[in-house]
Length: 227
Ligand code: FES
Image 1 (cartoon, rainbow, N blue to C red):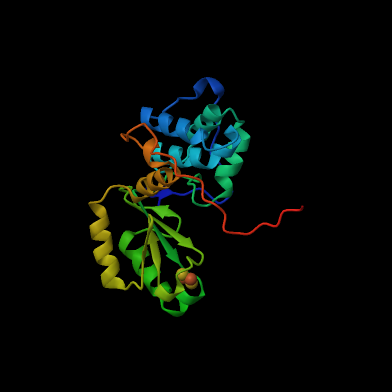
Image 2: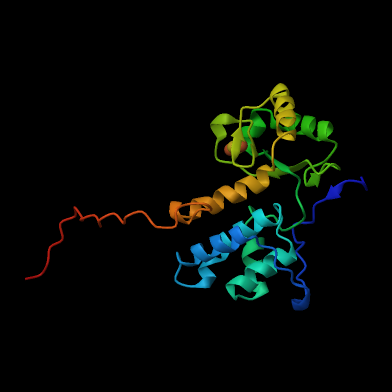
């Protein structure tokens, strides 16, 4: 067990660096994206969530104390405020570094009924880890999650932004082999979420001139005006 990478407990929090130890690691692209996103909001505080997605991508899928401090620094917010947001949402990885791929296994009712527990045991045995652990090669982190809201596909697992279900042992064998040769689905999902926030002309490498603004639509709702 000692050679496994253990995830922190649910209450474990990232460690804030001392101000003099803060290292700014955002790439030029990330800085440009954050600048563009700031233009979407009335103030810097409102940009914390997309800023954290940029950080999760830039820091390889894990929001370390330094990553959170960098977002706080760039948005001129306190570390405590940004950390409070990052640790509130389970899609931000703050407890510990995660593997290249995070396999999230739904063990809620429909998936239970459809046989997820034997499959979870199969995964644990095959990977040699329990829920909340990462394989020694850093490839896979196994997570137990609540209902993924696709019960018609039970038993269901999620990897990155993809749902897989209904799965069986043969499907899981095949999926694990396929994932080994693929880039980090954790980082890829963070990047996809960043790109969703950006307008096309704000994306890296895009023509910088915004497309012609569409004419404002006329409301079809008839509004009675007082005489
Ligand atoms: S119970 Fe598993 S997706 Fe809903």
